[in-house]
Image (cartoon, helix red, strand yellow):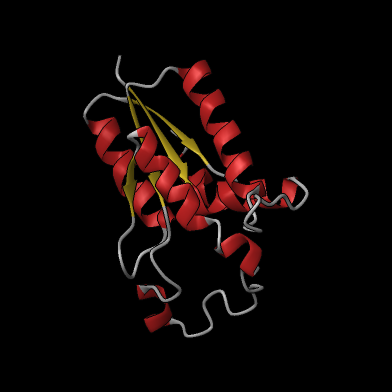
Length: 141
């Protein structure tokens, strides 16, 4: 059976960032989230042996939900700059691995993951969603 792994890029990068001490390269760029993300990615590939793999990212700060409810995620702390600067490196790494990335302006990674998961299941694929976001539990089937 074909197996799709879908990673919530923002969630896993954030978890990696907070799980590890701040690391930086010789140029002073922080790399702890990149390192943690890569370690998790390689372990998933080795253990799960997926036939398909993709990573979904949030495309921006404002989504269609903000139009209906302006306070949507209003109480959430800003992303630390030490984490924000690592997202381009993580995306570059995904490209180097040949892993497809999805982001869509006005939508969160959650929305993309939900849509792609449903579509893949309808095609008969086994799907594994990797996230730290409890809201994603509604996708469990």
